[in-house]
Image (tube, rainbow, N blue to C red; front, side, top):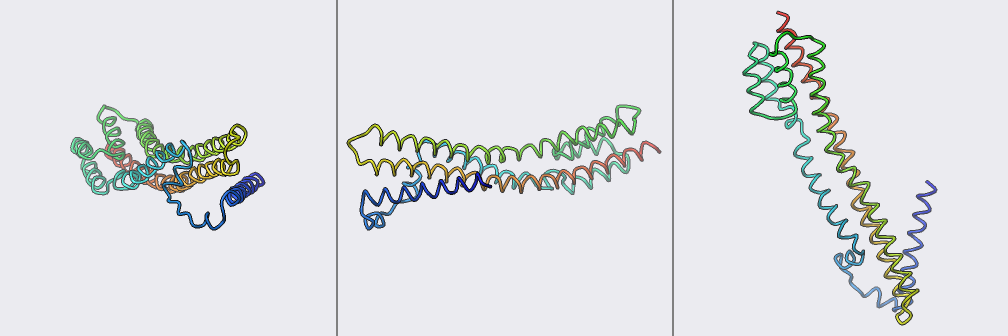
Length: 244
């Protein structure tokens, strides 16, 4: 908490310094009369803004992709599940396996692995459970692992923004130290402005990415729980039929 307060105080002081320096170089009325577009402001953030822009596009694409992919109907389609369970109930293993082939998904992969083991010969309930759990765990890792990209994006974007902050401060102090012919307050204000814009851009990309990661992580957990229930139903039916 103290570290966050120090960062907030630093940003406030830097913003105040930027305003004071800019107003000292040009009149206050001139400053207020300027209309700075969003594109102009972003262009003042330095080269890291290009990287953050690409990261924001990737993040938006991931969010849209997860909204379509991380759905129950994509992992455990209800129609497929009912059809497969009905076929397993009457012992039509080949037809159940063929139905899974028409609709590839996590539930299909688990069911196919279980059917292949059962059709291989004598079965052991413990080994059947291991087969289903192994394939189910692999599918769960695929489902849950996809959301990790959003987490990585949420962590990296503020760091990229911080790198832009460092670049901006270096530009500011180098301009003041090395260029003796130009107005130093304006150069210092431009460097500090670049630093603040880069910091803000990194947070703007990172905060929504983290929020969406938390949402999709919980969504994936619910879908995986449904997959586990469906896999258990497949195992129970196969064991009951083999026992007859």
